[in-house]
Length: 414
Ligand code: SAH
Ligand code: TMP
Ligand code: ZN
Image (cartoon, rainbow, N blue to C red; front, side, top):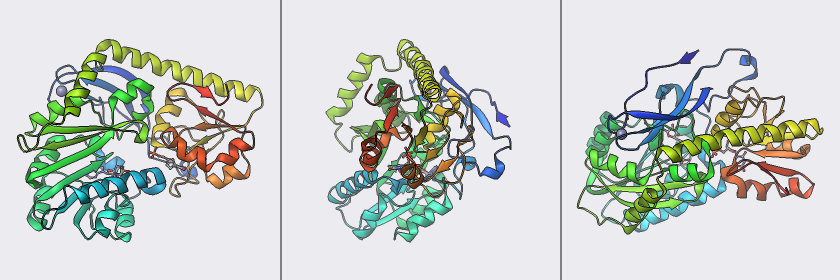
């Protein structure tokens, strides 16, 4: 089955989208297939991305309905990375020492997943609410002591939260706001729920990092938007907010954390103007840069397939490390299946024993990887490189070598 709805208008300003990259028919990135369904035709859609000619917002052309992607069996668990745990603990401490120091403060998090950020807020006894539509993952958060509402955040829910809990001092969303296509409703909800002096803070992959690293595997069904400071500022204004601060983050391959407030309530940080000037100088969303990005994607795919084919011809064994959502885009775009990559290991129980979407590669445990290490390991979870290389130091000590493809294809030691 495939979907090919007509190209939508810009989801931020209604303008015209100009497509610059078509990654072909792709499955839903987090739809890991049980082996008994291996032969069934998978749902696929055209994964293509464009930029708005009016506001330069980079976004998917077609989209998968949100309740098909986010449901009770959604497998992603944020707390699988210790680096991300400490990232969110630090942010929670910052909120606790800053925005949440008034009388009886209240924080709402969209996409709270397994409670990775809210745990610390809950431990501090601060009023909070996680909004997490996926039932199982919401349950994991509740089991950890946080308060969760298992629904999609939109205008009506925001009004209900406001009526029951009062205004929020902070609305926070990590790796979630860019996943939501219906931003009109979300912004109306934020307007309803946010206290007059409150802030809406969100962090998501930065398009500048995608271009700098050719990290096109960040493009998959769940990632509707790829923000730039310029497009976020325009979006904020359109919905009656102001972009008052922006921070670059090293996590997940490079992100930006944006702070929005009601106009005039906060000074605008020099970081905003600084990054705007950088984007302008780089021509970040110019047709030339976007065409260069698309050419880089072809190069990475060609080189990676060559490396894997040569390894196979030399009789070297290879495995993938990390059954990431990102890797669905890479593997499907390159046509890499079990013939070139016999298995992928991943620490997430809900992914183990299943097959990678669209490419049918078995997913095993990291223990299986350690018990019989391959000669080469393709680092699919490249955004967790440091953590994984540390954890798997035995692999390289035993002569194993990593294959990386971000920012370029490279076999360790070559
Ligand atoms: N914040 C976590 C989880 C990111 S995964 C982290 O940074 O690791 C994205 C999460 O957003 C998923 O758990 C998904 O269920 C949730 N989500 C998707 N659409 C949403 C919506 N409309 N409202 C709230 N959460 C949503
Ligand atoms: P992410 O890039 O979307 O965060 O997904 C990372 C995937 O990699 C996730 O499925 C968990 C897996 N993983 C491991 O298998 N071992 C690890 O040490 C880490 C950090 C992640
Ligand atoms: Zn636009």
